[in-house]
Image (cartoon, rainbow, N blue to C red; front, side, top):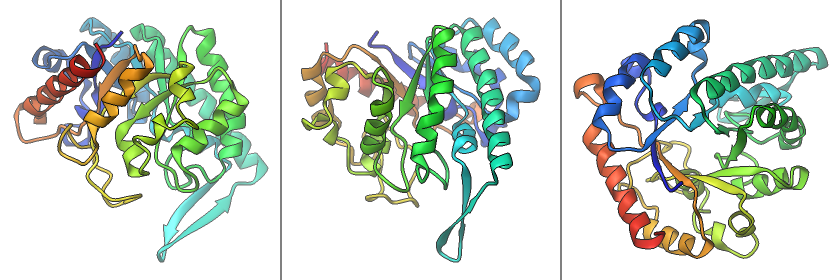
Length: 296
């Protein structure tokens, strides 16, 4: 454990056509211990080719990040923004059931990628998009199906503390725990900072997540916006925002955390392959300095 991974979502995006074939060369230029592989729905029609190609690179991919919008299909409704206000339309029972079935089929593809790559963890956005956690009770109820599917495959399905429209991430994670006492989480510093919760994790009312081993993985990212600032959602490199990483890791050191870390800092640039390798390697170095100083 205690490995540093790079999210492929930071490397493969719209600027370079989400070209997964870049990974063969990319891996040689990054000083990381492996990758957290982000799944995109646009890859589904060529998923067999993708799996064969990426497996041929023999990369270490212990973590899969499920397609982010998957959870929107289980939320029982959709939300859009109009004239400065959130508008909500609740699906009919038939529409909702169809979406739920589609979400299960969608997840099967993500799960297949995880099994083919030999991953033992999957990151799951239980709430996402404009609808976010507005129907969190329904999302939590349906989460059990996905959790069971993953566990049968020997994979831990980790719920991430993604940004919310209704509550806060820590509140929603606690609600998930009430229904699934053995649930595992991935904690993201950028998502937490967005809600002003980065150091709240260590308060007595929340630190059970670390004490009892529910947090299995950490996303270490910086954030430069204000409280719940939806206009500043960019994932920044370590040290380029206002997350107090020294305070975070100093407090983390008291909990015996032995899990791994993923860096998701957006790395698209005008360099070769459109990726800022220097920035990512600097992030890796900065993260290792933090773990060496406080954790090891």
